[in-house]
Length: 131
Image (cartoon, rainbow, N blue to C red; front, side, top):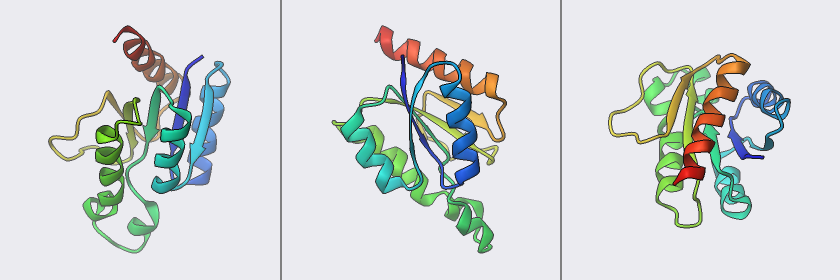
C-alpha cells in the first residue's frame, strides 16, 4: 500500500483526508507543520505528499493569500530539492491559482471529495512506481 504524508495545519481537514485515504488501505502519516512534515518525509519516505501550502492563521490575520502560502511554497521547494525526500508532491488548496513555476504531480482544489483524493493519490502513486 502507498505511504501518503498529509500536511495541513487544519486539524479537521487533515483528519478528513486521513480518513478518506485510510478507508481505501493507504498508510497515512500526518503533519500539522511544515517542519514536522519535512522530518517525517525524510524519515518515513512516503510515495506521495499531499500538502495544503496555505497556513490558515495567516489568512485569519488578514494577510494576502500569497503571503499566507509563502511557508508552504518554501516547503514544497525544499521537499522537491531534498535528496532524502523522494515523493510526488500533490497540492490540495482552497486557492484556485498557484504560482507559476510550481512543479507538482497534481493539484486539487479544496474541499476535495474523498473519491477525488483517492483517485489522485492512486494515479500519482502508480506513476511513481513506474518511474
